[in-house]
Image (cartoon, rainbow, N blue to C red; front, top):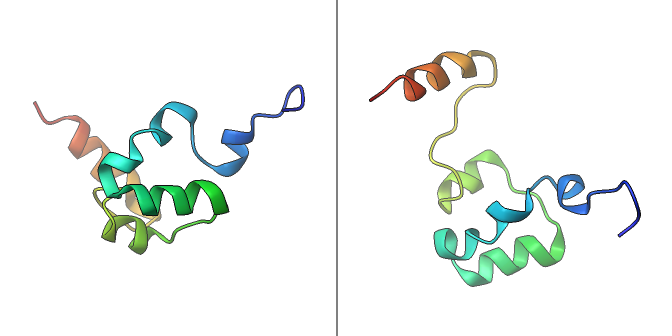
Length: 71
């Protein structure tokens, strides 16, 4: 790794969270994403369980506040 370049950030994932993915959507899919540095559409990420919900880009703040304000 070159000084000053965080390869995990350039891939679009952080290091700690990535190790959870095999438990969330299976070892084979996690390996595919890791080894190919591929990207997933929001629809595909939701389908395999990587994310809980997909919202339209513009009003994303309102659903986030509603979710975070729940007890």
